[in-house]
Amino acid sequence: MTLEAVLAYLHILAILTLVVFISSETALCRVQWMSAAVIERLVRIDTIYAIALALVFASGFARSWWGMKGAAWYWSHSLLHLKLTMFIIVVLMSIVPARRYRRWRRALHVSGALPAAQEVRNTYKWLMAQAHLIGLIPLAAVFLARGFG
Image 1 (tube, rainbow, N blue to C red):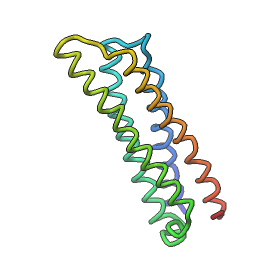
Image 2 (cartoon, one colour):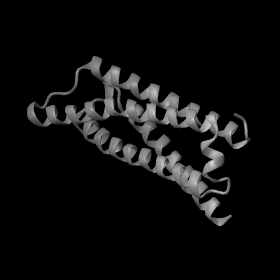
Image 3 (cartoon, helix red, strand yellow):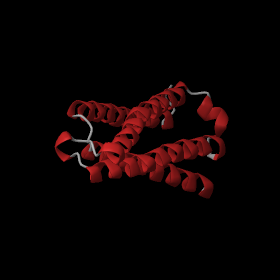
Image 4 (cartoon, rainbow, N blue to C red):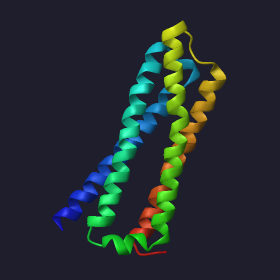
């Protein structure tokens, strides 16, 4: 029972970290706030976000294997597969902003140029799509926890 509690705590902590850092990226990625300092901060925040994604996956995987319900229970449910699919989509979607931030930083260091306003707006849309999809994953989780599916 202690292991289950620790695994649940680690998973929730990783999820909260993920939400905080996607929210931070979304808040900073605005045309009106774009500056050299913001670009550097976005790269750092995105790195922490990527680590949080890995921790969410690792802690969720650990819960499925070493938690009280066991791997057979979790992996036989379609809702786990739905959660995992949504999570993988979020991970894949996170590649676009991450690459843009690093490209923006390179351009900033080479020429001092800030990104075009349209590219910043487009990146903001990618971030918002990720944030909204992240918000749907717990819906599948609560149904899964209650044995639906």
